[in-house]
Image (cartoon, chains in turn yellow, red):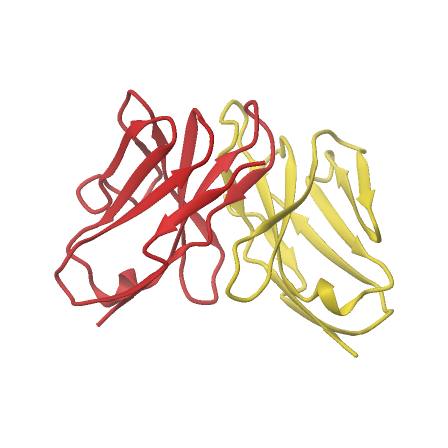
Length: 111
Length: 115
């Protein structure tokens, strides 16, 4: 079951904040976040392994609400380099490494 | 981390032909995954290539169409057989870093266009 991401696309000015949501109709074992720039391979951002967990580095952070079966990615004070398509990936229990990715959220940061 | 090399990086193929994509990793890994990314779409897992056993295919993908080889712990191939324009996609090889749960490293992908 593919997780659902929202919004599908967002346009920001440099310095603005954004939130990308990822939800699933099935129980989430873990949530992975990746960013893919145009023409490049997806790059890992972070994994959240249990409900209530929050992580972050630089100005990108994420939360995972196990009960609500959803995760959110927070981008604060966005930079031009944040532009790209963000994917959440969910992992099936006992099938480590096999990710089902959401449809992606295209983020464009303008100067 | 892992360094993944894929060949070819891109190709233009004729309908009905087959193409083999190679994936070379700079370290030994137990699992290797093959994903497909259709134009403007998300990443869809095709199969898991396991060394020493047959590949495990996801729903909607079959061995006759996407045969996979895994001769050793650093190398795998994916063949796209009897191609049609619907097979035009980016095919990505990926490997987990360590353990059963961890980040995935992706190759740069092989962009196939079928005419």
